[in-house]
Each structure stands twice: as structure tokens, then as C-alpha cells.
Image (cartoon, rainbow, N blue to C red):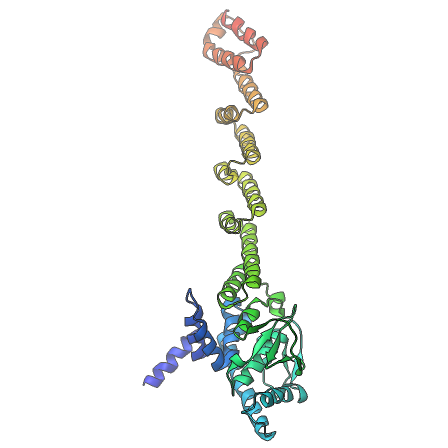
Length: 392
């Protein structure tokens, strides 16, 4: 019964195996336990790497059932490797012998094909039916996996020449894409845990090109890589880039507040200004002038632009009193004169074409309003005209 229940719950679990669940518990915490993460890498670095790709990037071709299939293919590959090692009488207590055996298994027997810009799943296929395909990141991961079957993976290091990754072991550099070994270069090496950060930050694969990663996913990857990596200088640069890209995505979706929050955090004055300008323009176009003024942040140029557009909008809607109030507060003399003239003309249009003492008396209130407007316009001719009418 218990076994049946476990099988039932496993069907609805988001995890393809027990180790994925253990890994999620580690990476979902604010402070990642690197020692535990290293233990999980030792158990199965391929599971760790593949699940991190799924967790951070959300690739559709890494759904649960496909990961389960990939892990089954990995088990078959492991069995083949161990059988071949036994057949070749490999001394599995000798690290150099095992590394040479990995080269023989992958390269000499032509199981592996290098292809730039691929993802880890290309190595986790049925090797009896097709070649294993991957680039430097992925094949390093597979090397580490085979090595971990016999030894502590911390005996391996990685080096990161520009745009490349290779293994370093005991004074030798291993070009895993070919299996070639050479005397170690003077380039700095990093602990094997760094491989996870490298894989997370490698977003040039064909999945990225085919299914554009959302900026949120990229930021998630960068934050996770930052938590794992000891090479903060490189990772911080990627983290900032990911945050910037997310802000750009927010900007295209008119989420100005969210974009502004990120650029403020990054102290990016250039993009803060761009964001405010776009927000003001967007809200002005949608006649949401209060929001536009809020995003202007009292920038004189943006405030003037917003208020003038608001005045023009109010005039078009014949809301002249409110338009006049804003024009006066902002000292927009030309617009003020235009509004006053328009208000004067509208009142003048209410008067009869011929005026006598009786009609003037009937429209005295209107003429007084016209007089006040003429005085505000500082128009002496109109002022005199209104006064004469009132004297009739």
C-alpha cells in the first residue's frame, strides 16, 4: 500500500527523481549551502546541472518526462562506460587511467561530437542510436560525472579562457572537447563548484535562440549563479546585465515603476531618465496627466511638457477654466492669452448682433465677465469696448 501511494504521489510530483527534490531544497533557500550542493554534485553532477537548467530557464524540452528519459539514457551510458572500462582493464583506482578511459570512451570510440551552442540534453540521448552532442560546458560536465564514479570531484578544477571551459587536474589541462591533455597553463583555475555558475551563465545555446528567455528567467539564473560562484567579479557583471534586461522588458510592457526600481537600485542615471521620459510620454498620450507628473519627478522639462499637453487637452474638451488655472500656475503666458481670448470670444458669441440699452441690461452679467477677461488679457481696446457697452 505504501509503495502504491509513493508511486501515486510521484506521478504528480514536479521532480523527475529524488535528487532533484533534494537539490530544490538547497537552491530555493536564500543562503545556499555550498557544501550540500557539492555533495549533490558528487552524487550526480548531471542531474544537478540539468535540473538547474530547467529550474532557472524553464525550457519546455526539459519537462519532467523528458528529464526522466534523459536520466535513463545517462544510466545506460554509465553502464556502457563501466563495461568498457572493465573490458579495457582500466585501473579505476588511478585517476589518470580513468581520465584516459573517459577520452577513449567518448573520443576514440567516436561517441561524442562537438557542437557549439547546445544544451546538456544533447549528451543525454540513447548512445546506441545517435551521437552525443554538446559544447565545452556540457562535455566538461560529463567528464566530471564519469570521474565522480570513482573519485572525489574536488580533485578536478576548471579554467575559463575567454568563451571556453576546460578541466584542470594535477598539473594538466584537459581539453574535454577533444580529450587532449597538456601541461597546465598559468591561467587561474577555479573549484569544481564553479562549473554550475558557468553553466547557468551560458545563455548562448540554441534554446535561447529558438525560445527567447524571459528577462525574469535570466535574472533568476544570474542570482543563482551569484549565490554559487566565488568569481564574483564576472558574476556581478552578469547579474547587473540581467537586472538591466529585466528593466528593459518592463519598459516595453509599460511597467515603469518596476523598471524604475531596478535602475534606481543599479544607480543607472541614464536609464532612469529614459524611463521617466517614456513614462511621461505614455501617460500624457493616455491623458493620465497626474501619473505623468508623478513620473516627471519635478524635472522642469518633463513638467512643462506634461502641463502644456494637459492644457491643450482641456481646451479641446472645452474645460477652459481648469486649463486657465494650470496655465496661470505654470506661467504659460501664450497659452493663458489663448484661453482668455477663447473664453472672451465664447461670451461675445452669446450677445445679440445688435445691442441697445435693453439687450445690454439683459446681458450685463456676460459683459462684466468679458470685461474681467479683457483686463486679464491686458487688452486696452477690448477693455474700453466692454466699458462702453456697460455705459449704454
